[in-house]
Image (cartoon, rainbow, N blue to C red):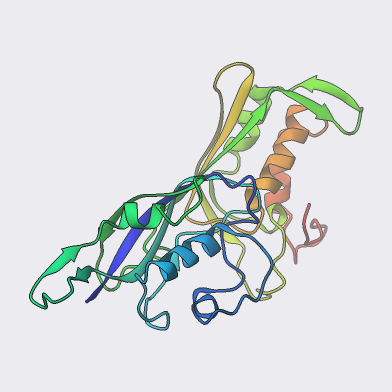
Length: 258
């Protein structure tokens, strides 16, 4: 018997080439590896296959909450898929053993990829589309190398915070992302629910950004702009200018990655 489950995943992504697999569960199930990329999802798929928790990759309804880039870590990634729910004991057709998914999968995963918890969900649940919001933390030092002056400067966190606040709301973020050539007709409208910078300790800070969804490299592009503002190379209102001057408006900033 199979049921749809959601799994909470934590991983340190420093040595992986992102979260999303370039091979796919179906091809890996067939023993076909279409990519040399080593991703977190590849390891999860291999663990699912080795443990035989996935009986049919065509109907397992796999979904992920989101992607992370190469080197990025996560403490709350969520995936959902249909898994086998019990182990039938040999010579005992009327009995079945409950599967401890956390221990079973973690034994097959690298130490820097862990399944934290799981839960049964309804058949219409999607890790991607049922998600109400996504939260990113970007950690950085207050001492920052300025590539323009070629010196180390202390970031102005107050200016950085003011610029971050301007991102909150529903906007066209085409000037704050890298274009994905595989999605020529995608919309760039996204809603940022919260965006602020906070100091933690020992000279380190973090950007906290919560949104309904994010574009490709959106957080990295946002940080590039905030660093320019915090170093005094650009005014705080640069964020407003980039949000207003979208593609198609006269005098707008050309579309493309920053």
